[in-house]
Length: 147
Length: 382
Image 1 (tube, helix red, strand yellow):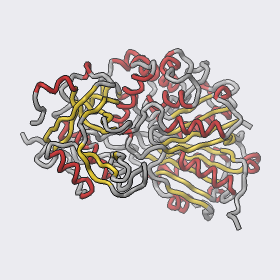
Image 2 (image 1 turned 180 degrees about the vertical axis):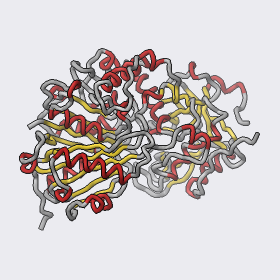
Image 3 (image 1 turned 90 degrees about the vertical axis):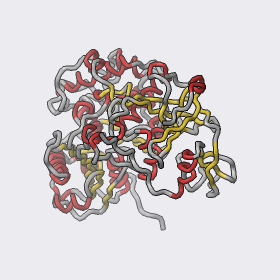
Image 4 (image 1 turned 60 degrees about the vertical axis):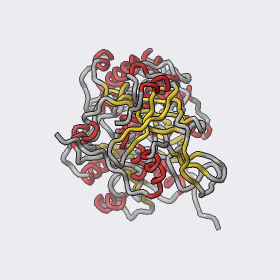
């Protein structure tokens, strides 16, 4: 049986820094070169100082769990075989309220606690699409989640 | 020169629905026409009396021509926004400013594809910002039920609310619907039944969601002077507010508990002499159950973090402190995107709610949306 393809990425040169980064095993977030403010989701202007000089920059990959939900129903063919899965909003360590939507891996839903410390890992959905996912810091020693 | 505007008191004089149903087989125009005819009949007005139209769903000018309305002095099509309150809010402004005299505001809403259709492929829900879906789709984030699940979990983390309180909320809303002949969901429901249902996006269950259907709703706004001559007891707009605090990405809101309704409520109360304790009935958006709970707290109808226990103790039920969503809410009357809350508030203030009438209701608040944006309107009897 053929596994359905993941949803394709849009043709968007302005976010190439991000997807090139994940394929290289780096989490890159757009950052203002004038004031240092991180901007996610990416926009052409810094909402802190209104500079339009921004570029993707590698971040630590450390984060705190802000919110989560376990999805039980699939809303796209690719995810039919993946339910249930954990969707999570994490606060990246670089800046207060720098929220990033991701998947939480390496933990059962019952053990998830808001406020827990997380670290980035990478999962390949296709050769083109490598996504940053997050797992509890304590589980890091157990090896890579990347398939 | 400055633009000439008036500052006229505005009343609601007519309300109406189409034949709301699941997969009705009717077009947007059918739903608009049925709702318009019902609202005109309710008001005792003729099509030629309407000189302004605002809508979300379909096209205002198309509806006006189809209906034989007067030449329009004002019209507006709104897109993604805090649901029905957007055309309603701007309709009030048009009448208050004197740029139109009798305005009809619509919300026409067609049923969206089911989750089964989405999982099978070929169907997708609309995305407000297609470029932003690359931060959502690869993680399996496609449906509003998912941000709602995030908001519920965060809300439970910060408040005294539990899943049992959400169960009680579903039961309380259904009890209201049992008193409403126009509700689509009219079978008794217990909190235990709610808890026995599967999760969609844990902790969210299907009974935390509004009920998909095709619906058309219409509300007529006019001046106080005209309202006095019409057949219904006039209901007045005392205050209103719109708020927007973030782009449309609910999933990365900086604060998922004190979202736009907190800002909106602050604006609303700053524009009136009335207080939260004056509210006789509340009609608070329930696209997802957690939204109503956020509004109860934002509006100051219960203490912060206490909306769950407040509902479970019966305070939002018939005979409670703040009877809320007295039509049964969109979870039971079907997705009318906030228009049902405006219309039910009007009927409560007119005293036309029959078995679910709140005795002596003289101040009602209705509110729409959550998260990035929201709106609220305070209505009064004479």
